Amino acid sequence: QKETVIPTELPLVQEVTTTLREWASIWRDLYVGDKREMFNTVRDMIYDLIEWRSQILHTSNNHTPPV
Image (cartoon, rainbow, N blue to C red; front, side, top):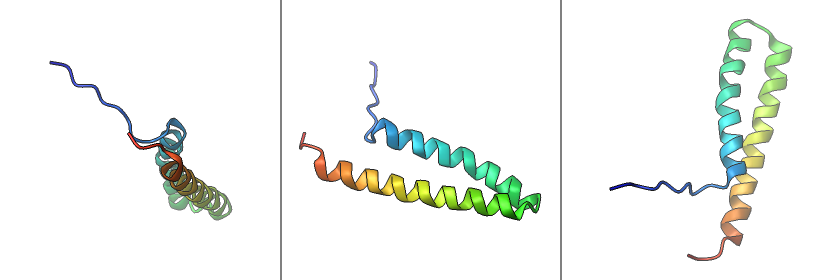
């Protein structure tokens, strides 16, 4: 018997989530390497992506037709 997994999130949200996970490692390396300017730049981009992801989720939840 096969089980089919259907993601509940939009592909765009999945991609942003994956990007944030990848950037977390980069961000940590910048912190450890004491590269403050780049660390702050990446931090700001991460915060922007988190906010954008939140807005996409909110919008998609309000416009998704009932199943």
